[in-house]
Amino acid sequence: MNIRLTNILGKSRRVAQLYMNWPTALLDRSRLIPRRPLLYHLRNGVRFHVQARSFDVQVINEIWIDNIYTPSPRFSIRDGWTVADIGGQKGIFSVLAATSARGVKVYTFEPAPDSLAILRRNVALNALSNITIFGVAVSSKDGEAHLHLAADSGCNSLIQRSDVPIRDNVRVEAWSMERVLKTIPSPVNLLKMDIEGMEYETLLSCPTAYLQRVERIALEYHDDYIQTSHNTSELVSFLNSRGFSAHLWPERRMLFAERNSSV
Image (cartoon, rainbow, N blue to C red; front, top):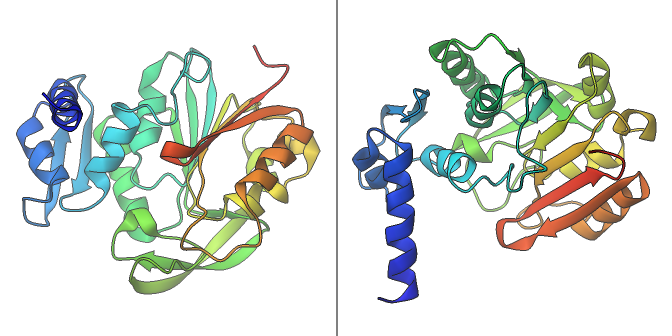
């Protein structure tokens, strides 16, 4: 059996172990079903409202099967943690964080109106009272910003991408990372971030005094299809100079940083 077939069969088994309605998830991942609203049932009781024939099922698989934000024991969510989900989209990671351990508090930030509505719906669907939602973008400064709405909500961004069609633009409220960390009433054990290229300006503009309230960062970085004067090497150096130990997972375009004093 060749390696590619082995990988496909292995992923199919993991999908079947995660979803109760796994045949639909496999067809959706291959884009073999019509574009329509779907309700996914996970075997642990979690449910998600999503859109078929979009990136939604891929996001669920990456977060719940591949553990892209929680890849190691030191990043696995523990009892009593405070988690910030920057770029919450439809709540896939927020729900994972909120249900992974006892006493976890999640603060989720999502500006896109359509995604925000489904995020709220998914939180209510799972009867989660430990997720606090903010309908704002996170950027380099407080104020208002243009949010570019892509054909697929997973590609919405404050920076216009060159690889996806834009269906609309909306004005949204934007908060700086400083304001986010002022608003969360306790140190952040895990800062998850997926904001389609704004990760550079958002973190680089955050005062050191506020970054010191963060213990771990797991972010998806974007170095293609966006116009920015910054790069991942600069971001790694910046975080290392602010007391973190940062490294990249290039195959998944992920950056992980852990404060040197955290345990």
